[in-house]
Image 1 (tube, one colour):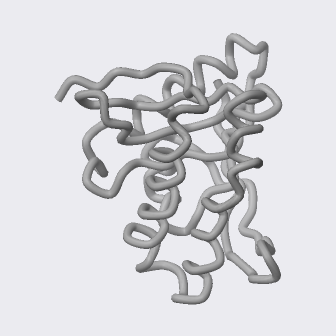
Image 2 (cartoon, one colour; image 1 turned 180 degrees about the horizontal axis):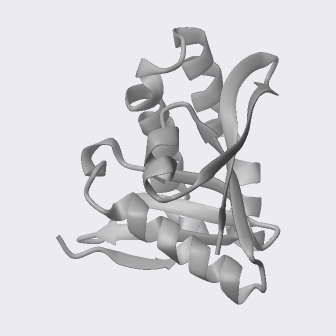
Image 3 (cartoon, helix red, strand yellow; image 1 turned 45 degrees about the vertical axis):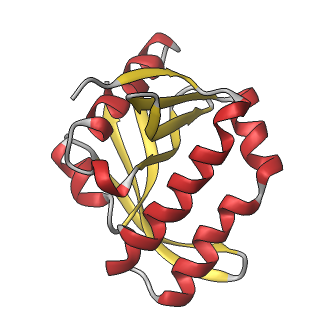
Length: 155
């Protein structure tokens, strides 16, 4: 499988938000309640926020045959604020390569550590890439509580 990586553009927005919504509704379903999934996936509807992310953050997409199959974005130079891989492309190196690109970018930005808040579902992936758990936490989104983890890795 040939995967290409490039910076996201505003034209990518429909595919990006579809992957965000669909991944949460399928992949994360096993670790979160129906209500949590509904609230979390509704974040795809805030198009203004997604446009800001694409314009202001280091935001990349992974493509296979011109179809976006994953994306990730970096905030503050060393914080992975989001990483999602299409449900049909899980466990096919897309996420690992996105992660390596984010780590390289954080290093280029002069940081010694990279961090992220990750879901219960994503924790095993980050653990397999040598990330340590800084702490388990509860976050609130639209009034709904979510358990997740702050993870980090020294670069």
